Image (cartoon, rainbow, N blue to C red):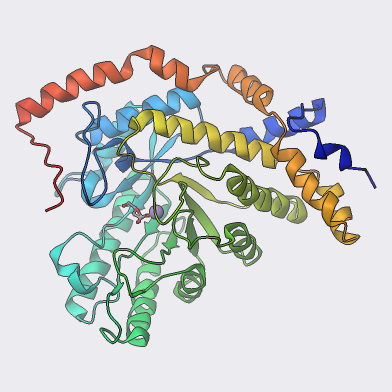
Length: 413
Ligand code: PSV
Ligand code: MN
């Protein structure tokens, strides 16, 4: 077996020509979706800090997403939130046309099952069948929007849950979810999939109805063959092993997609890899390792779900995209044969070093080569800063806000 002990002192390895090819091949297949809501003014529940350049409407959001795609070359689709991005009575095809105009396409459709007053006691988990029916209808309408705009992904997150012990029947709520998800699955088009996202807490603080990956998995399996699990990296407890969840979902053919962000405490919405890039690497490693073992690449929707209150939104998005590409390419460099050998002989030290070696390999040349081959700027963030895009957007959007009489209220209460 190859000796990996030298890696203990090697912190930044350079790629061999074979590794360069491997990293480039990985980049070729990697695409990541930006969220429309990441370009608008958002904040914490204690306040919002406004940015002049923040998107006001769907045209702005798609223009920003198009700008990010033009610079990075790997964000061709934009996730949308139905109530935030589509006007009542508007033809969804018009939004699809607008996206095309800005060089992007509409990606995952996110119904909104949390902001209407009727959802005080939940949506699919509500004990009132009238509200459950309304929630289902909104999802069915979202499926129709998806069909109209050519999106094959319905992305579901439920804020449902209870805040106090005894408040609701945990089992009854579970059964309501099973029923509505099954009914919704029956409405999917032949090419559409639905992703079920989980989150341990917030806004419910006692028992969130879909609190973890096990619950999401069970519900997705019961809903039908085109329901999969969505892993939002921010939706885990401290120290939870996300890559293990990913590996299990892959093995069950139940991993549908990701919402990427980073966290320190809870659903912090920090830039991907800002706290723990090695964790993101380990997640990507599980995916590459699975693909190598199975001889096929799993179909996974990689999406960003971040709202920035301090960082300039477009910069944070570019930073995330570049970080995702870099870590995806690094994870593609793991020597699977050597890893299998180390695992078979229980060589723990080598197994660990094989991962570390890939993680500490400098993939910048692969990214540079890929960008050059695709006529993309060598440094997307620097190019964005040079472009003057934000200055122009800020001037335009500031003026329009004034004309429209939009007030920016940031207060919590
Ligand atoms: C909830 O925290 C979540 O992660 C869901 O994906 C929502 O759709 C998104 O954030 C936007 O609020
Ligand atoms: Mn999410």
